[in-house]
Amino acid sequence: MQPNLAIIVPTLNESGNIPKIYEQLNSTLIHESWELIFVDDDSSDGTSNAVLEIAAKDSRVRLIIRINRKGLSSACIEGMLSSCAPLLAVMDADLQHDVTLLPLMLETLNDEGLDMAIGSRYMHGGGTGEWHTFRKFVSRAATRFSKVLIGNNITDPMSGFFMIRRTCFLEAAPSLSGRGFKILLDILTSNKKICTKELPYQFGKRTVGESKLDILVGLE
Image (cartoon, rainbow, N blue to C red; front, top):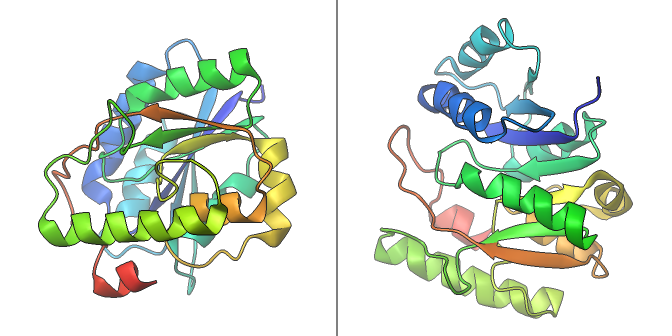
């Protein structure tokens, strides 16, 4: 049976987080039909093996391994294109995105007929958690610049946590650059007619693995 929702999780050396992501989604989406697609950029820490162990027991879990290809945005695009689910969600593998927001995103799209629901750290009720000064600066600067690019009142266009209708994503897909770390910004600049709604969430703290954010990523 075709799932109603596909959750796309790009990974690079996140083996310690894989079981936790699965457990959180499995306990949160009890009443939903879903699939979980990990898109791994040929991790060296056994991430793909961690996914395959779970996939062997649960057919809702799938793995795409990319050889000689890197990049979060392009990984998200490949994962989204691989699913036939009418709704597509994107989230990071570092457990910093609140999976309990997914049912509310589903409800928002189903009840309000919108194209996209976005998890926002910068609207009332949201937050960035215990970020160090450099990361706060990079995020705020990038957010202000990107808001100029898209020309709307979205508070967190740099969010990596969102849900979109597959039909809407496919309309934007031919124009996506696939470069960089922020697939949401890519989609919003490719289709400025997307009807969106933001939902607040508190950005969590990474407990396993290392952040991929550095000065070069910030500049990009």
